[in-house]
Amino acid sequence: MTQAADIDRPRAGAAPAPLGALGYFKKNLRDYGMLLALVLIMAFFQLQTGGILLKPVNLTNLVLQNSYIIIMALGMLLVIVAGHIDLSVGSVCGFVGALAAVMMVQWGWPTPVVVVICLAAGALIGAAQGFWIAYYRIPSFIVTLAGMLVFKGLTLWLLDGKSVGPFPKGFQALSSGFIPDVFGMQGFHLTSFLLAAVTALLIVLAAVRARAAQARFGLVEEPASVFWGRNAVILVAFVYIGWLLASYRGLPNVLMVMAALIVLFTFVTTRTVIGRRIYAVGGNEKAAKLSGVKTERLVFLTFANMGMLAALAGLIFAARLNTATPKAGLGFELDVIAAVFIGGASMQGGVGKITGAVIGGFLMGVMNNGMSILGIGIDYQQVIKGLVLLAAVIFDVYNRRKAS
Image (tube, rainbow, N blue to C red):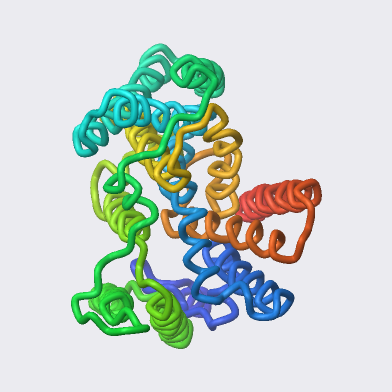
């Protein structure tokens, strides 16, 4: 009897039994569910719109229309992972766009100087809000709600209730410009296609190296079929989208900015001490503090970072409109928060990925774009987006209860 029990009992330190593809997918449903949903939604609208969704022109517009939302979602993810929320990002976005318009259009200041000042202003705004949240324990909901109202009012005051523009050509290129083609081909932007293909190969090679490192320590959990299937999809998707964009005008400047930020924040959250500590703060702040983590400073930095990204988004949005308006940024905070939650972040903090926030942002963008092409009214669009957000939160709660 004892021998039988010893045989059935797993040895200490033994690797877990390998999961099949279906079992692994179920275990990681949070990570793969939204990606699958994005693919299915894109396929649905591609069929319903008669192929318009993935036409090069519309695909470029999709990137331009959602770049500022995704950029802010990167910062919002860290805020939510740390256990807080920021309702002021839309107002800060509009305020910084207005500030840039006043300095460039009315005062004639050079674009590089204005961009630096605006980014610093955004970081200062985020730091000011983060100070009260981190060090005085005032709920982030209250502080950032106050910030939302304050910067809405300051935007109206700064613009005197009027639109200000147009911006200089150099500033407009931040949002409406495209990278140059060094090959100079007619009708096809070869540089953009090669960049997309090389990026896809680098992503796959990085994944292969990471898997090899896990294999050396016996930590591989993902089945080979899932691993190679996932990377094949990534490779094909990047090459296909690169081909489509190259068939029009190539890669937009704002896409390059967004890609650089995604790589940077992915590295910070997965490979650095400060990234792991932010997750620790959101998971259990008291335990993190007892472990020597300076929780107040981390919360302060996440809000300063959020303010700077909101400022960058404000500059990109103003450059795209070629004017600053008193209503700029209205409702952006709702789209940003929805993108993060739809992408798998938890309301309780400590859970979420950069890739999930990006997927959530594009999912919202594809829905907006597809429903607009189909002529669905804004009233129904708001209802559908609200139901999608509610479903994502219910899914998160269900997963947590199932895990416990």
